[in-house]
Amino acid sequence: MSIIDPKAAVAAGQDTIRAEARALDQLAEALAGALNEPFVHAARLLAEAKGRVIVSGMGKSGHIARKIAATLASTGTPAQFVHPAEASHGDLGMIVETDCVLAISRSGETAELSDLLYHCRRIHVPIIGMTFKRGSSLAKASTAALVLPECGEASEEAPAPTISTTMCLALGDALSVALIKARGFTADHFGAIHPGGKLGAALKKVTDVMRVGQSDPLISPSVSVADTMKAMSIGAIGAVGVVENGKLIGIVTDGDLRRKLSPEMFAKTAREIMTANPKTIAPDAPIADAIAIMNEKRITLLFAVEDGKPVGVVHMHDLLAAGVR
Image (cartoon, rainbow, N blue to C red):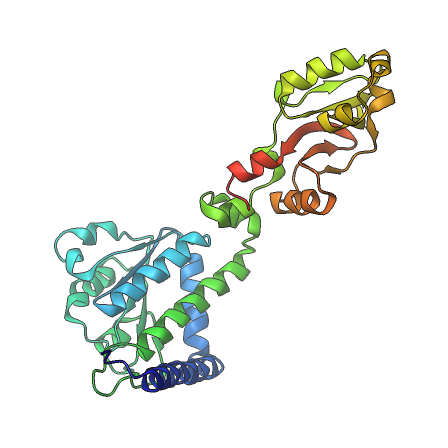
């Protein structure tokens, strides 16, 4: 029989989430009060760092530090986690004069941080301290001390870091987003450093996946149907673009050929069987837009054009291969 009582489990979960939500509300209020100037100071130190942001913490604070470093790095602020214990055994060499350090400790008295803080003061590296104790060693050593509102933890029986780590993580996110907005960091910048996975794929442009050259077959409107079919087989995308005076005026698809198949068809030209004024897309458009158009129009390819001139073609298969669904 399970030891979990459904009602008790849900009640504990709700109590935890509500307690963390209240703590986050207090933190947001603190940013308009006691944390206002230190937060702005910290954001400026991070923005002005010529090197990297070194984020450090021990135990659960260390896990939060890793996440903050990852968020900063993925949003345009070069950052790296340094384990405070490893720092005392040679990894202090990773921290140089152009860096900025963000150190996290609930008590502000984490022994393993002492060597790291001393090293930073010795080489004049600015320190941002994130702690809950105003008079702590970390707060006193900090160039900008982010002293969070005092809080308990979610469980009185086993006071493992829960509410406190949520608050630190949220404050790290707040700093990251402040830097995003200050730097004018855009979706294009984000996509450039997130090429992998569905998120990266969705941020790619049509130009990143479109086909060019022989894979982008183009013919003139006077070409015979037989030669149109040859060009279509070379391109292997099931369509050709029809170009006149450098402008795309139509397309011929394998579907067009099947629908119009007759003995008389082979006496015609591409102009006579093409679909005029086809749907197109700009090469710098997000591939998410290409997917939307294909789904709406129930088509499988789009020619990319600039000022009416075809510069490539994107097929549904290319989008699927790029990881977009």
